[in-house]
Image (tube, rainbow, N blue to C red; front, side, top):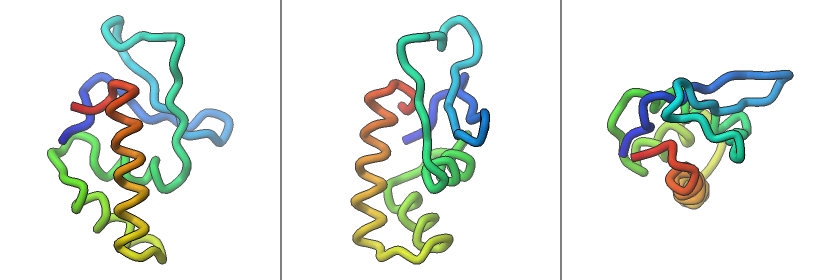
Length: 88
């Protein structure tokens, strides 16, 4: 898996927002807002090939969370990113 090129994480008024850059990514009907841990994953994974296990490892290394809980959260997050079209 990989986050698609052309999307950037910005912090706007304290909110973590993924925005598309360039005309090919512009869709004003959708805005992807991330919480702090999702923004952390985005920053760590951007520009790299990764697996669910890579994302789980990042969460368990940084946060006090069990691998099982991290896997649940990662699956939901990556599914949302796929649905929003920011991941390939």
